[in-house]
Length: 514
Length: 105
Image 1 (cartoon, rainbow over the protein chains, first blue to last red):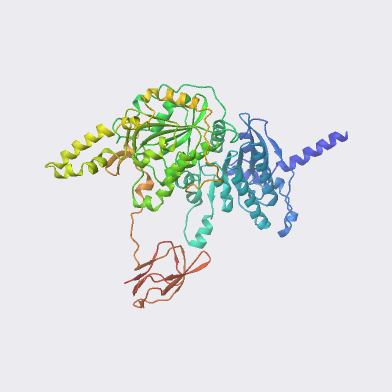
Image 2: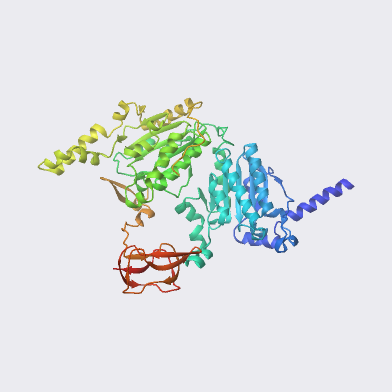
């Protein structure tokens, strides 16, 4: 029958293209611990949910004998599907086809799915595995990258954009992930750099391995380019799926509601924070003692560990947590931790996710290296991000809140909607030792026993000022609460803030201290 | 918390805190004021030419050498009046960033 013949023809055409770069190239890919592009999409999306588009697209390059070469699907797979029933648009570069190199049609497929994601207001997930520009296609490759970067920027803050680095991503190509919201990397598989080790060696004479230059660990621990680190592709996909459950489809919506669930009893909030403000504890335990099901999904776990950021749920609603981490560098604010937190705050604000800030910090980090690294402008990012954010902002001061750090960490003065403080809170212009040394300088110096006088004055200061009640007497703190009351107060605050409306002055855009 | 062994003490202002100390902090460079007598490579590259000799008198603004880097022939100028004390690179040498190339006195 003629109809069957046509269908068979389609099957035959599909079969050829679905082989990608052929069996040999696929074997090579597997030997590196990597899956093929289509396998990756299948394991990321809900079963049978993937609709592929542009399967039969071919390049039309003519120079350098390219007209004699066929590159199936032009080395990239695009389409849409669902993750836990949430729609997502996806592209995945196919390294088995010409090393996943980006030519004109390859880039047009990517920009097509990007346009579609933006128009439909659904998240975009890009899986990067590419040797870079297809040199034979010259400036058309560069045009392709530029078109992608432009769309990344225009879509930023409108739809969630997720980049997954599952192979090399080098040269200009790295700027697309850098413009997206979240970058996922896998140990030994992900490689990102502007110039590779060979160029660095020939041009500059510096020798370094690919892994040390731009491997998954480096980008998770040192550069801060990556947000999620996984040991295997499988673990990486689980992380992406989990992230999708916490975020809305676009900036006009809220994240999906889940069944509310109490925290696990093993996180006893009364026993986590030591009374002595110089002793450390893991602030993630406090988050787990507050959040639904004690589930905290941390972002940038390995970078600037002195601040902790991530998602949890409160009464079924997604919340973004920002918390100083006394366990790492005493929880100080510095260049990297300010940068890390500020970007996350802006993410939550863009996507209607309420912010919960847990405060316990000695202040900004002193030192020549910090000053020269620009702690002023990087630190200012945090003030900017909190001030600008119009989502519900809830703050709990657990212990230390001194000086500039107090102001920066979602204080009333930056328009926090609710500020709560535990009885252990010390809200003051600086730590008691420093303050007493300045205020009581004369008394201390003129005393017969300056040391015991200093101690006495520090104690006096502590009792009078290192507490939450001075701030509470001015209304800067709305309520002094017991640790065990924290969840109740936060749940209610989030609920009453559900329809919060704030109008800011009209402007084209602000000028955050980038 | 059970990794007590990794904890150290960090002094911030008058306060001392028990906490983990980051690698970044431990390996941070201590501040060294710039010394106009020492000519360092400000960029990794190749020494293309050296215009001075040891013992030669030099004046502020004089060309000392050309460092080829990033497709650019960078002219390194003298920042003080003085005498060339030592030249520790030769024409054609590849130098990494921060290498001492010429010392003046």
